[in-house]
Image (tube, rainbow, N blue to C red; front, side):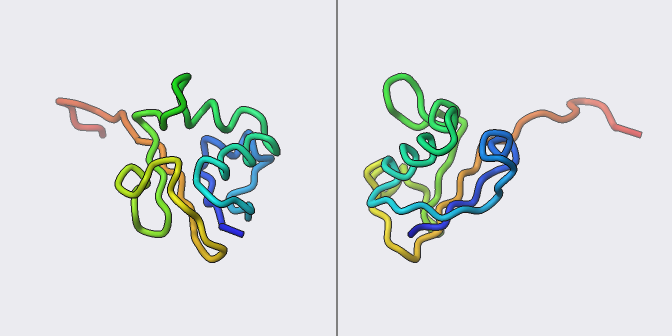
Length: 97
């Protein structure tokens, strides 16, 4: 089973779980199984065409899946999957005091 590290924005959908194990052969299957157990997860990560959303990065171990097969990236039992949404915001042109 692969270990999935769930980012804070998704934990509201996973009952607060930050880490879980999922048995899946590919990243796409892992997302399907996460969504079956926690409805809404897949819609947050994948667009209507079935591709990862631009603001979401998914890593298997240290490799971003867009570089290794996308949602078809194979998973092994000891793999760690990290879901990392892009961060944005902050001040521009001003100093916070």
